[in-house]
Image (cartoon, rainbow, N blue to C red; front, side, top):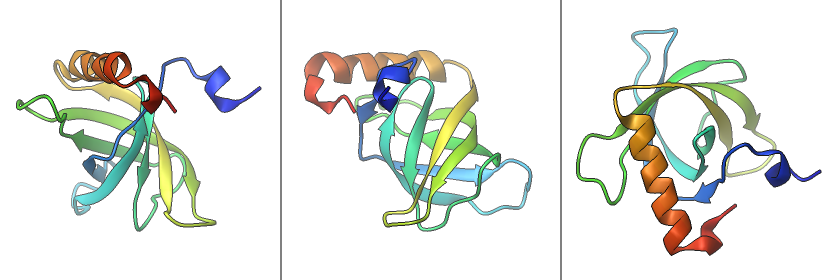
Length: 120
């Protein structure tokens, strides 16, 4: 069974800059990565340095069509790609701030309805 067949939510390609930091270290610097793809369940983030599986992170991403607050969520690193570039991490969302989940859902639905070939 292919990964796309096991997914609970549709995944779309995106190329947004994302800010993230470790949750277990309050003084951890804010880092940046590039969002490769995303769903309501999680995302894949390319980054110069991965954080390792089971690391809890806070993620902040702007929505292109949305001029409001960025989507803010907690996530956990489920896997990492370090064998070839670009390096990156697969993150699973564990919780959203405020209306972030609803706004993310609307944004993904808009992408799926306007550009169906972006499905990953």
